Length: 165
Image 1 (cartoon, rainbow, N blue to C red):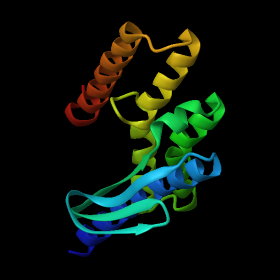
Image 2: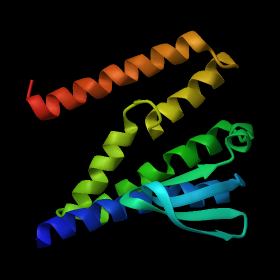
Image 3: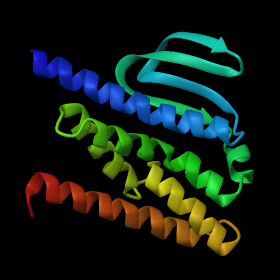
Image 4: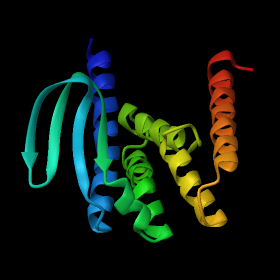
């Protein structure tokens, strides 16, 4: 029972700290935060602090930060990448600081998982920002190729991890 509680709390803490990395990086770069929350599913409780609507959701798995995407897109490329990569950075630092623990393993897994360019993960969002900067505009064909390619990479990683192929 202790290992299940430890795993649950470690995973949840790693997710929350990942999202707080995005939150503080966005604040540092002047990107407004609309909403931040803990968990998934229906809202259990919410409170507005300043301009941020903080929420706790029913299922205690996950965390999120919803920022003003248009404001983020107006920031210089390096600031956009800082905001998008801050969660991964937090997970890597926490992994090093807690190396050898279950919490460290979850942080490493979150960092590596978010680097893969799978749809809506940090690696995909960063790749989209770079792609749009390279082409000077959104390019639907290139973005579809990136999305499908990232999905293929994600499936290959999962197949390798779980099927040992």
